[in-house]
Image 1 (tube, rainbow, N blue to C red):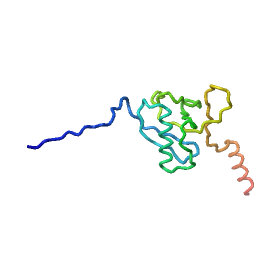
Image 2 (cartoon, rainbow, N blue to C red; image 1 turned 45 degrees about the vertical axis):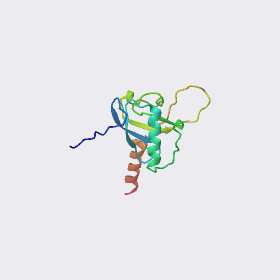
Image 3 (cartoon, one colour; image 1 turned 90 degrees about the vertical axis):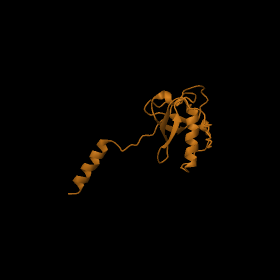
Length: 138
């Protein structure tokens, strides 16, 4: 007689949906992508992003203290997400990890992060430069 053994899965039961999120680190080459539970706290997501970043050997070296960083969502605004909020409550999957600005000792002001934008100059500067090249080349 053949006895079948049932393997028990000891993994904790996950409640809620899982999300594939993308975290772009300011100054790094590309985003980090990983799966999180929508009920995860923002602080946990920052910690996971820093660990993944270090494990991949990315540059610049950031460190591992998640209290030194803030998570932002450029779609929502430039205000940093609060560490106790749930990551799934924002309805977005693309985030930006920024170094926390140095505190001025003002107290409990919301952290606003200036997100760098790629700038290619104005169209007027491009137009004037192209006209200048055409005129001087005759």
